[in-house]
Length: 358
Image (tube, rainbow, N blue to C red; front, side):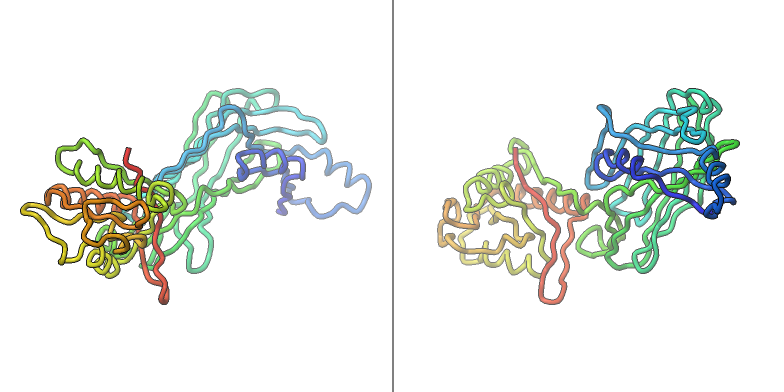
């Protein structure tokens, strides 16, 4: 069987689906070899065909967090007899994904909610869906294909578990491949465009080296309450510093995580032992020692509790429990979002995030 992809018209319609969603077209059967006679061409043109279009509309929705992806849009399966439209199966589809920061396996679902059918489409269609994980060093594996019938009034979900293997930092963009058939019609085959790229890693800097996966393109925000009775003092320091320091790091510009070794050096520069620590107090630095923007002592001098708008670093003596517990919240944020950093040659590559304290 030779499959013919969609026409330019169908592809153009599908391109409206938020810039990247599927459009597939008519497929030919065993007699798909190029016809050599006018009669053969006429017969081929009259062959019953299916076409799928996913269309953007007022109810289209796209949502992403660091560990979840969600897209919904219009679904339309059309039945054609030569140049004539003889039936339409319509509804919406939802593609969703739930990643796990502490596991190399995640879940992908594709749901079709068919709401109406006309003409030849009233009998519905049957779709076989499988995951294409790609090839080579960035390949993943998935649970097997699934086949289900879709008709007006039904809601059908295809669910898959996808796994990233090995210990290296890998990126994956698995694609759902769909083959749809109806009695008397040639099948239509196409790929549902992947959600955002998934990154999986086993870096020891987060979650103790346990492999996990996130959407690295989503830039999260670390925010703790200024009124919290435990770490509020640290939050108030960050709130003031990120709005006062030159460049407004973490508020106007993102921060970039650094390695554990560099964080130790940063802390020594920003909060040197030469600074006097009153009883029960600890030195709190901002930007954090754990980011590449931290570690400066420019403008500090002995003015640890005064923030200089021309400086790039601030430090403040705060309650030791506030410093310890607030730092624990930052560590939890790193783990929950797999904010990693690693060395590539002499360069440190670090994930970005904001620290906008409300």
